[in-house]
Length: 190
Length: 119
Image 1: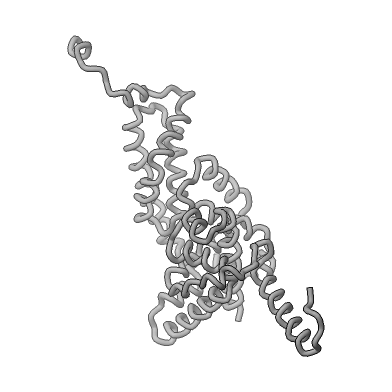
Image 2 (image 1 turned 90 degrees about the vertical axis):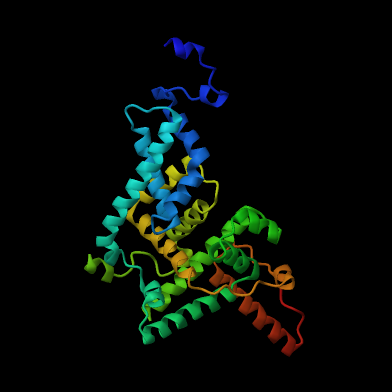
């Protein structure tokens, strides 16, 4: 205890993280979210099937964090967040192994990934038709969609490239997604 | 479960005009942005759980990004093409295509009949 008194004061950012009371818990979670969400999503992205599943797992982890009885300091909570998220991801994978057949990666993905020669051919043809559909889209819409969904650029970057607003890029991508979805449904019904 | 899959789709045939798919695609695109707020994430979750069709439509949109991994990127549009493009996303792409075809036909007829250009 005497030692504690003679210790140098903690750095400023640690002063800002006392054990959170109930009322500040949401604030702490929000702070974790702002500072670590991107890292968490990247961490999860390698453990689950899709970006949006990673978001869903992260979300569940935040909810568990909010319901902790004895939340500790932020550094502890951060570790807890990542550990919880990893566990949720593992649970989901186990559940998915049994449900995967039912939720069905449907015709397109099946065709694209199933490697018997005939199937591979018809799968490639289906992908070719989808490629042609994309090429026939209005140019700015096509460009937004390709840069966003195939090259993985974010809306802001694309907006600068095309000289349009972020929200316009997102509208284009939404229209393009629906156009592809309608086409895929048509092919499936043939 | 298998029987469920064989049932006809619970959505309208016209996916490009279906409000649930429009909302699903909108969420999908918003969530892919690098800056998604906690409030937005919660709102998305609430939307997903509101109606089983919401979750189903979202999964159907998400499936497209799986397929995109196998697609070769088409060549980039030229500056000229981009400059001439008048599509503003206010209508589905299929409507735009139909309109472009109609305008094109109109021009050809006008040319043949030597009429003033249609408006």
